[in-house]
Image 1 (tube, rainbow, N blue to C red):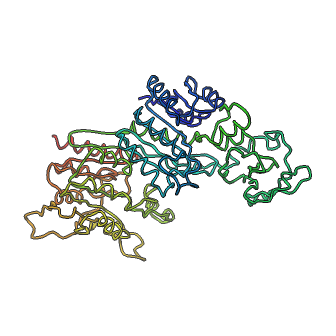
Image 2: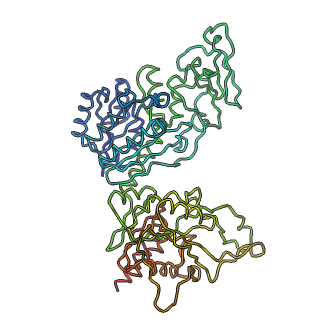
Image 3: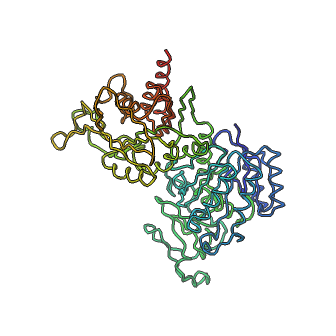
Length: 567
């Protein structure tokens, strides 16, 4: 699939340029009011057509839609103007002209019906009217058939040497595309502009009045100068220029970043404002990128643009979502996807399952000094980034929507979070029936002179309120204790996954809490143990895993289990 891009408010083309970096993206149409910016867009996006005009004008908007259809546009990107949303948030009415760009964008999406869209603007979009403005827009786009996801992301998290926060909104038909998270190496001002001549001429050729700065504090002071009356009269602190710090980030800068009287931005060492080529570097533009027009127009083109590294990160997420690995067979669906976003697709499709049995990250990883101990191959509980900063309960409210009326949910968790998981389940109308204990016959000894051996793990079992839940007690026992005792994972069953659960223990849970032919969902399937247990016991299975190495392991194990079952 080739993503053909319509770029609304395209400027010089930072959004299209960054999006076109990942394969499969092609900029074909740009719209803006600035003639010079459009000329620059044409040079930076070879082969793209441009339309000069304002999309808030219906005649122009309809022309754009017609032209986009002729060129096979299936992707719309928009650097949405959000100026004024915060300062007037409480006074905004449905007919306020500040909302016109948003309304025009929604009109384009409704009439053009692209496969995917992406919006980047100031974080004000998410915060205006206490979030109600964005929620209403998301609801309207949802009625057009789009699954919409959004985040607020600092440009520095995408490898931009600037600390500016952007709202990022991505929507697609029948697909849940995650917005980017931290995805680039952090850059400093030094990384971005140190190789540019610090003593070069000022961009506008004006005399730079005495702009002395404390380099360590990052603030600038302006001394009165008899040759510069305007500078001598400046007294308001908010108009002071800011001195960049070599090893810090550039603050958010506007189109007047070279005007010291308006709070300009000073070079880290030289007593001058930063030049346009330096500002472009700070925004993540490569040196070959073209800006045209007057100096003021160039400054505006730079500072109003979507930083290309941020645009590239969005493009990569879209590519991954449309090319994600999915393995389908009779009764089995395995997807490499972020479960936090994939769930929206299942909700939209009306998918219902008989049980959710899952072992999400415990959020307990921490550094250790086991490498200094005699047994140097012991990794302790430093499992990796996937087990850090995980919201233990944040996923539950969406996934319980997938449970059938009489379905069950079983969630493994650390003893530290049992009460939190129970409280969250109760908030979502789940009746918690028990805490199941997995007792390990042969636990790994650790710190045995200082604490008890950790030979148990815990899982919370709950059902929908009023459910006639499944509970298959074996006929050869008088009752079942809420404890399953097995050995730890070892031998040929062992995979590279550090928190792999016992297949014997998982099969017992599957047998007790589901019936043959039932659908079991595991949104954090890891190495695929729940899937193997489901296949072995004659159940159907849906599994999600975000990390490719574990997904591949799960696919191999579940495929082998399926083939063995068919023999």
